[in-house]
Picture: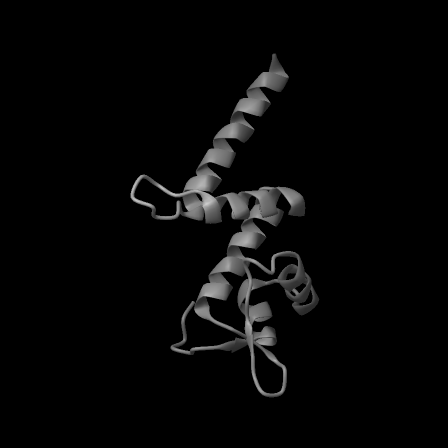
Length: 112
């Protein structure tokens, strides 16, 4: 996704992620602990590659997996606090794997 740019403006982020600008702004408010774009001297949001990745993660959790905002907040906050035995934060990918496994188990339980 990189074009060797340090920062992307919200319109560029919208085009790259397929998420409307107003949705990105809304997510910035809802997930302020997770999305933290800097602002330039004119107050415009500037997103790093890391924020782009975070927006894509949000898109996957909310749209692809169908989680509600409250559930995504819990997952992301747990990610921040959950660490492995070396004190390293557990990556979101591992959490997604766990959520998928729980989804499969719930589906199996509902069939019973």
